[in-house]
Every structure is written in C-alpha cells, then in structure tokens.
Image (cartoon, rainbow, N blue to C red; front, side, top):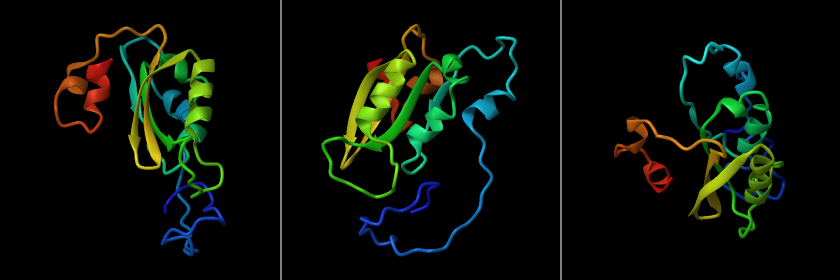
Length: 147
C-alpha cells in the first residue's frame, strides 16, 4: 500500500483504510542523472522502475534523462484488467504511448495478474547488453534474452 499516489476510493484491498503517512525524500530521474558525469564515461544505462503505480509519473520526471537510458522496465496496470487501486496509476496503453513519443520501442510485455511488466528499448539502442543482465538470477532476465 506504500506509494506516492493516493489510494483510490474504489479500492477494496486490505490496506485501503490505512491512514498512516510517512514523508520520504524524492528525487526525479532528471535530478539523479544531473549528478552523473556528462563525459560519456557511463556507456550504458538500464533502469528498472517499480514504484507501486507511479511508474509513468517517474518516467515523466525523466524527460532529460530518457535520451541517456538504453532500456527501461516498468510495471503498470494491464488495460484488459479492471483494477482501480490508486488514483493516477500507470496504465499500459498510456505508458506505451508516452515511451513511443520519446523514441522507445516496446520490446516485450509480460502479464502478471492485473499488472503488466513492460520492457522498452531506446530506438537507436542495439546492444550489446552487459553480461550482468544476461546472467541468470534476475527476475526479468528473459526480457533481456528476448531483446
């Protein structure tokens, strides 16, 4: 139930009645990438976002960072599902459209109940992927192998 998004009034999940709020510091991906060197010493950047429904909001806070990112995996509500958990949650079609407008190709979608994990690759990225993404043990290892 922890998210920066407000729990939807239509939510009947066990934690919908939780009223406890904790303030935490937040930085956008643009802010984080502003701390990285601009000297091209970082050759590849691969990002996995799982922010309890706010994945598209995170991407919207990455307008300057996205051109530097090679691949992204996010989790969103499946369009086929009828799930309302948090107000303003990431929806599959909205994420696909947003990333397409920013020159990312949807390379793979994997269903997970009412959710989907979506793998995007920047249109001009053709690898090679780093070894650590191809080794076993990563939950979304198959996304990288299918790329």
